[in-house]
Amino acid sequence: MYSPYGGLGGYGAFPPVIKNLLIINGLVFLAQIVNIFPLVGWFALWPLGNGFQVYQLATYSFLHGGISHILFNMFALWMFGAQIENTWGSRRFSIYYFACVIGAGFVQLAATYFSGAVWPTIGASGGVFGILLAFGMMFPEQRIMLLFPPIPMKAKYFVIGYGLLQLIFATTDLQPGVANLAHLGGMAAGFLLIMYWRGRLPLKPRPNY
Image (cartoon, rainbow, N blue to C red; front, side, top):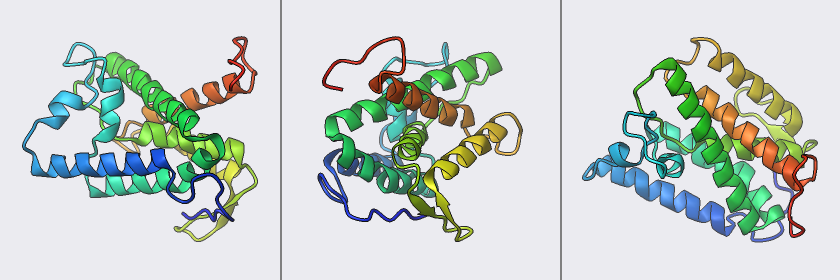
């Protein structure tokens, strides 16, 4: 999919947080390939009672399960996230991204607890889906050109459709081994944070937001 920027303000095509996330994720993936240290054992999100540590709610997002996994996540992070960071600024974007990552992690912990699963979760998808949600809310009328099939679509419809697709995957066996509930958790965390910043929740944001 492709989203034309139509001119970027702020930092440009590679704002600081996006650039640093791309670099760190790439370096960690290279470390996974070299496989000198048990990174998954230390930093993946393990289920409660099966190796879980609090810091894993953030660190799992820097690990990936293969080249296609990291390429898709990093491409989507850059494509949708750069415009958001240029609009919000780096500080607010960082808070939002990691709130989505951690929110997705909590949802995945609940999912593995109730399902009895014992395998770890890795990947930046929770944060990426939160970024996707923010993009649809901030730029709902902006057109996105899908690559497969090559159909232009407004961002708001793309986000709604992709969210529904994740819900279908989460409630069926059509995509086994994928943490679809965590994807939805990232979107839900992002939605709540945006609503908080907009003053739509009972709690009121600080003036600088």
